[in-house]
Length: 222
Image 1: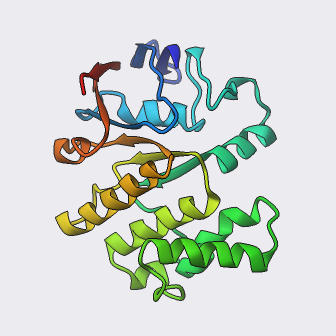
Image 2 (image 1 turned 180 degrees about the horizontal axis):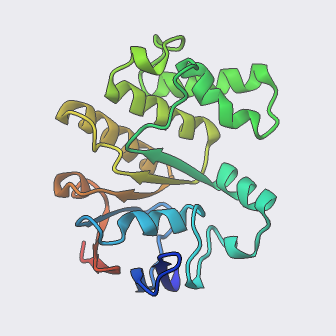
């Protein structure tokens, strides 16, 4: 990000909220950066812009060398699908699909044949310890297991970047520890991770840290 700001304006009103203020920062390949900050500090807005889910009001953004603001919808969707894996607090799983089907779904958008994407999904679920839960639907899984399905979905896609927004927020301490262990292992394999969290104990497990205050980002010494 280079001098990125984001202003939300209320429709039909002169009122505006500056969610991000002149942010310049870089997440290096292979880095594991945790961003903390209070409610309303701008963490989620930052994540949405990095993940190409929102556009900045001003400034420039580059994801692995590409400028998402210059891409049409088709190329932007391809960038997200191939370069960025999302892990959310709410898991974002389809309730009517099995764990295996949830992990296979984004692979279908790449045009990978069913047999191949099924094998890729099985391997990813085995990697997060859910090889015996392939046919379980989200409602049959604990919160920690659902989050592991969400991470398996990212693993199967082999994206070089993972954006994790409060991935442990709804989990008990043991499940949270399991999720952080998986993310740390992926980082050791070279995956770049940007983690948003309100929990300082979770942030402390990342390689580097930053804090958001009133829309500004401050890097902290390692």
